[in-house]
Amino acid sequence: MSTNYLKVERTDTIVIGAGQAGLSVGYHLARQRIPFIILEANDRVGDTWRKRWESLRLFTPAWLDSLPGMAFPAPSRSFPTKDDMANYLSAYAERFNLPVRTGVRVNRLWRSGDRYLIDAGDVRYEARHVVVAMANYQEPRVPDFAAQLAPEIVQLHSKEYSKPSQLRAGKVLVVGAGNSGAEIAMELVTAGHPTWLAGRDTGQIPFQIDSLLGKYVFAPLLLRFVFHRLLTLDTPMGRKAHAKATASTMATPLIRRKPKDLLKAGVVRVPKVIGVRGGLPVLENGETLDVENVIWCTGFHAGFKWIDLPVFDLRGRPQHERGIVRDEPGLFFVGLHFLYALSSTMIQGVGRDANRIADAIVNNRPAQRASQTKAIKMAKAG
Image 1 (cartoon, rainbow, N blue to C red):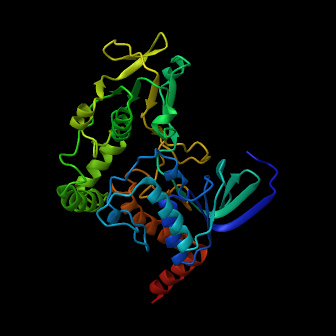
Image 2: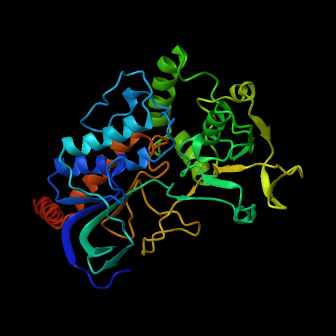
């Protein structure tokens, strides 16, 4: 943490993160005329998407990929690429003239009196309100035994993987059989790498999302109605789903790449990887795989260690009510898994959460609180 700052900057609200969550919050704050700044660690808005593997396409059609106030510029039933989404986010920030500071990495967030302080290298930011606009998926998670693999084996986490040319010629083990693992395994086997996919079966949706059924039934019924309207904290079914989703690391069923597609392409399914023997990965059945490359599609840690505030439970999860931290007035979260609905981490769902947080910030401002208190007193007197 820095102690000698070249600059101290004060504003009403700081938003940390300029992804879809942070930009949505910024849009609603601007409409409410709240002074704010958005801090982004990457050099450009949208870089979080640009840095993902090159062949990535969204699972949601373009008509569900719009942020508040600006339609996604693509045919409504098409599935945008990761670069399409990155460019859209960049254009969104420019269109609404959102005050994004890129290349600013937050090292620490803490509180002093009635203000939150943010250490960002040479600059310290101070604000009455802070919105952590980041998903739970920030730091790559890799098993400890990965360090025991032979040094000549190329190891990449899915966050680092971009394209097949990063790998050595030869065999590849993809660890983690969720959507990322299945997508990457398919790309690698198509590129000519003998490919093994390790991990338990996560299930699959029963149709192709690119089909007519997928485009005209799956998207509006499952994504828009079930994920966005039905499975929320306001419904008994949603509260049950929330408890299950937040109590486990349950993987999402396979969406685009199905088990039969992987099998047909030549991907070999193998059991879970449990350790290393002689520098090579060992499977749950005792088999050792002699491979030249390992891709870890093993998920992420939340990455909130820089938040120096007592807002986490024993499992390290932020404690909040739909993004509002009651024990730390003025602190908010947007973009977390199932913040309010199963769609909260999706582009279609984040705008609704952002709007609620912007309203909460308005109501938490001293002038607004004073006005409300005066109105209550007048009502009682009358």
